[in-house]
Length: 260
Image (cartoon, rainbow, N blue to C red):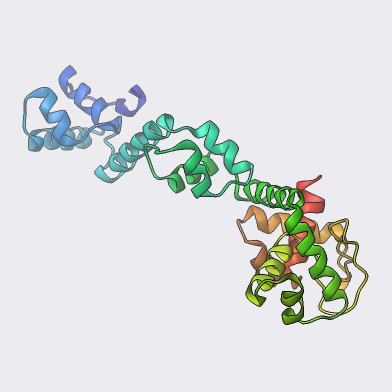
């Protein structure tokens, strides 16, 4: 209980111990007029009158709005302490989606997106580090899947030969839509999928050969990407802002931020 909140400045009025207690309870932000009234066996209106009188006597009396905000903050903090924040933080930073996190931790005392929002406020996690985890996890999972690696190898080789989606789909015996989805997934991981003939190292996720506008150097571009990630901008948004293809943004994130 914060005694300083109830301390008047050069106050000449006598205040009973009961009224001081009422003021302390009110300024704590943990009570409503009704709960304080029930403690002292009086009406809500009587408590309001006492607080109003104390305010006139130059005591610091928090406004109803401020008390409400403080009470909400107390409730939020209390529920957050009941949540499995350590495991949620670890899973989030390892790149798990909210649905995957829920499957791991089960029901929580408050919505998961609220928990994540509060953990970000406290600096325990961040959008940027969560994205790093997702990119790294996705790449590692893909690299372990031989079927996906074979499919990607064929896509890269055939795109090198300037083959159409239809031709690639026929070679892999899958639909054109599935080919498009796989190409989109590759690009989201920073893998360069050419539209015309080009040299491709299929055994290594290709590094971006940068030729950026206005002679910006690599360090400046990476710093800019990290700046926008700290602003919780998505890679697609950063791509538009910096006029860089989205797959290159992902590749730069992985090579120069995730792995640094």
